[in-house]
Length: 314
Image (cartoon, rainbow, N blue to C red; front, side, top):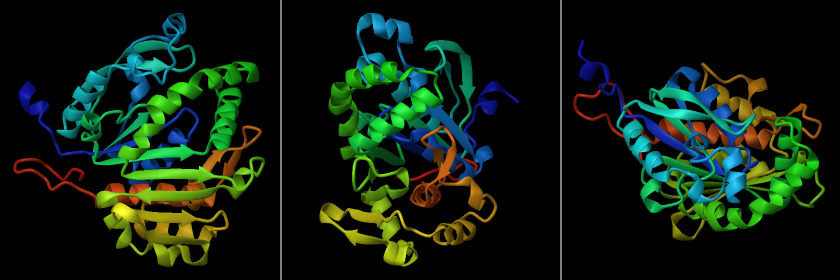
């Protein structure tokens, strides 16, 4: 077999962006979506791998990781276009433990490519490279809580270091990261009724646009939520889905077993890091993971003549 035949695309992958500020829950959501679809069918692209500078170099330059100058956005665009076409890409990897870069690695796109990071679609040109663009948007109190918890419990930072980092990130987040919510097909908004309310009282609101909104209108979510949420049409063709913190686990289990019978396991979804670094579970989070995985399966691009299998959809 020739090199050209070996590199020929097997299918047109579905490119799913899970984007949000540092500490917004991207890894948690992406992990659940990947497990539901099936790890063998998913390739994950980490946008941190496209940093231009190491952590030490960023600090010397006085730049946060949220600043577009830190990211090689032209290479991100090139690689997303290649992955969308079913082609392999090569890039170095970023190591969060010390903020340096590792060796080159090859990404071979499977049926779904999950793109995870801070700046996934800061421009309309980059936005066009995604079949489904999701943006995670915790309210400030929750984001502060989750980032502090993650960085102290999982990444070895002191509380003082995290607080200093958050203060430096606030302005860049407002300028560069949060505006991406306006370009997303799905915005996941997390809120608490009071600033000191526990995570178990988090209220989840999903705003869906374009094809994602059409898909939700026809998949019976309102009936599933019952009295524990609502689905309503909004201006501009949007659909707003509200999920109460009281949503019963049985609702998620029934949907998961029906939609993903080969991969859904009740104890695996909705898992998150608790206050003490222990594992906790949020039913609305599991519901959100299911919804995103469901959309990734339904919004498919038709296979092109001569390609093997089907890819994803705009």
